[in-house]
Amino acid sequence: MLFQVTPTLSNPSTAEDTDIMFIYLKNESDFDMIIEGVDFRLNGESQTEVIEVQAGDGEVPVGGVSIAPANLNLGSANQADGIFLASNEITEVSQGTPMFRFFIESSNTTSPINFEQDLIVPKNNVITLWAKHGGEEITGMIIFYYKDISKD
Image 1 (cartoon, rainbow, N blue to C red):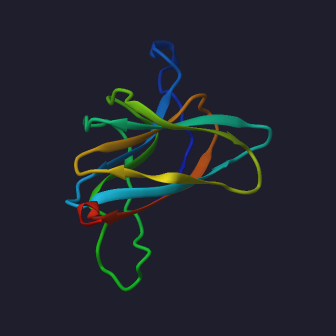
Image 2 (cartoon, rainbow, N blue to C red; image 1 turned 90 degrees about the vertical axis):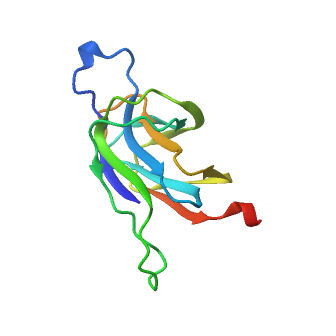
C-alpha cells in the first residue's frame, strides 16, 4: 500500500496532544493480515519525525482517502479485503496500544523497516500510524499479505 501525506493538525489550538493519525488499516478478511514491514521517506532537509504503529479496536474514522493496495501476485485478480485510509489527518479514533516506534530522518532514500516478528492483524482489528510532530511530507509503503495462520 503506497501513500504520501503531510500529517497536520487541522486545528492545533484544540488538540490535546500533537499526535496525528495519518494511516488507518482495518482487516475485513476472514484470513489474518500479516504486515511484514514498512518503508518511509521523510521529504525535505534536516527533518525528523517519530512514527508510532498502534493497534486499535475498530472505531469508525473520520477523514482519510481510500487506497486500493496493489496485489503483488500479478496473476491474481483478488483485492485486499479491508479499509485502507491515508490522509494528512484522520480523526475520531482513540489512540490504541503502541506496537512499534520509529525515528525517521530526511534523506534521499527510503528507510526500510522489517518487523522481525511479523505483525498479525486478525479480522476486524485495526492498525494505525501516528506522527508525533507533523508538518513534514512522508512517503511510504506498507507491505502485507493474508494468511490462514490457524493452519500453521
